[in-house]
Image (cartoon, rainbow, N blue to C red; front, side):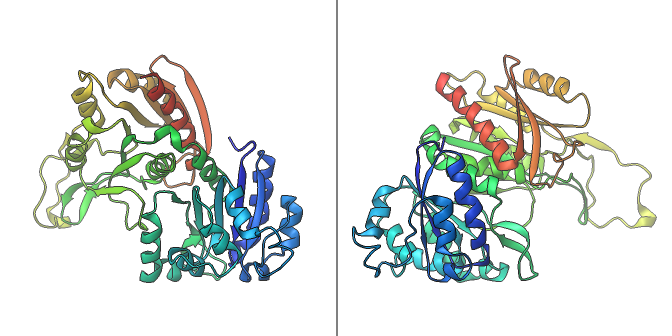
Amino acid sequence: MLQGKRIAVGVGGGIAAYKAGDFVRELRRQGATVKVSMTKAAQEFITPLTLQSLSGEAVLTDYFDTSQEEKFGHLHLGRWADAYVVLPATADLLARIAAGMANDAVTTSLLAFRGPVLLAPAMNTAMWEHPATQRNLATLRATPRTHFVGPASGPLADGDVGPGRLSDLPDLIQAVKGLFAGAQLNGKKVLITAGPTREAIDPVRFISNPSTGKMGLAVADEAHARGAAVTVVLGPVGELSPLPYEIIRVTTAEEMLEAVMHRVEQADVFVATAAVSDWKPQAVSAKKTKKTDAPQSLALVRTPDVLMTASAKVQANATRPVLVGFAAETHEVITYAKGKLTRKGLDLIVANDVSAPGAGFGGDTNVVTIIDSHGTTSAAQGTKREVAARLWDLVAKKLGAS
């Protein structure tokens, strides 16, 4: 997908700038031509000579340098590139891009660029969460040609732990590929369920599962990167950074079903990644049940099957969405997944052995087998964003055949 593509890489002045070298090298390995621009601060972390050696092209660092501006270097870079990637997109750099400033080699060439832009934020957690940064992000996300990847969460260089890490190299590369796959889903409406559901026992206890929603949000991120209008019906997964698509928060299976049923007939694709709780208590106590009063057994009843109900609603329609399910299993994974595919009238199902290494709840990677309605299988593994990309490649073929 990157063969022959011309990609400008703008490097910002953060500790993650040292990762720009690996990024540039991988882009070239996959066939892209790369030209780099750098802020003055970026040159404190990695040298222009390093990036020139890795890119094979002169590096733009100073638009007051007569040798660099002999042929209007900042304008040339903006006109030359098919896509522009900024990493790390520091808090300062995001603020200046959002304001439309042009006071260094990166912001000036970026302002002269008319194509798709990918911003890869990286900064301290407090800086990421600051209201000013969030306002700048909202401004940038309102621009249709601007896309984001990350930041990831985890240990930071300064010892803090939280959101602010530059995304891993496979996710960065996949996000770049998403810029060029955008036409696949332009104008398509995508509905996704993600995360767990919770079924209350009393005001402080509930039945649920360990789902974090990471897989569903990766599916949403990839769909958005490919141009879709995305809505995610999301179970309780805690606070999230602002996302560039619609999020509908729900808690119970009934709430998820209601949200889906109001929207599924308008969707072009419905992807059910949510780990919906299959059972709920027959009766819910209005007060916390004390240990001395607790029953020896808990009577349970089934919750509604969100995917089955939504599928039944659209099956008879003249045009219906492509229906995609997920099957999280621990044994006989393919057998159970195929049964679910047939029983629920799906076009594709993602079979996921959650007991396998690198494929469980809460991780950043997954290992799956995608099965279509004809029984054809396709393996996918890697980061959840990479798995999502493979899924959307297959969904796009289904859309093209419909």
